[in-house]
Length: 96
Image 1: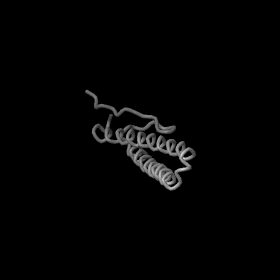
Image 2: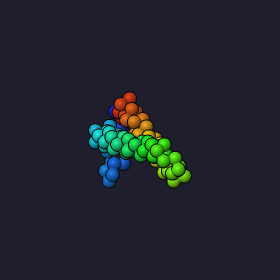
Image 3: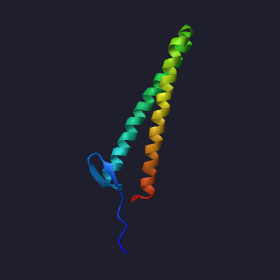
Image 4: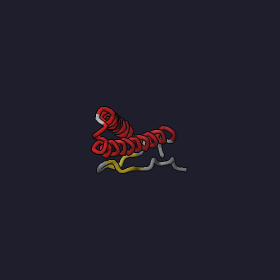
């Protein structure tokens, strides 16, 4: 009986085993980048709300921007959750 070989994933131009530390490091870094983007987007949304409270007459101008920044936040959060799910799976089954 031969030992189970790790599955491979594409990593740029290279093919690396799923349990390669380089992949985990890159995913960790990507999550950190997305977290910064998420905080920025949340701050943007909060500022549109603040501006609306300060200048209610600008509601029609501010609302599309607020909705767009809120959508961006949701998409970034989805990306973070997806990567964190992959990382959690790598910890449970490092060979995938």
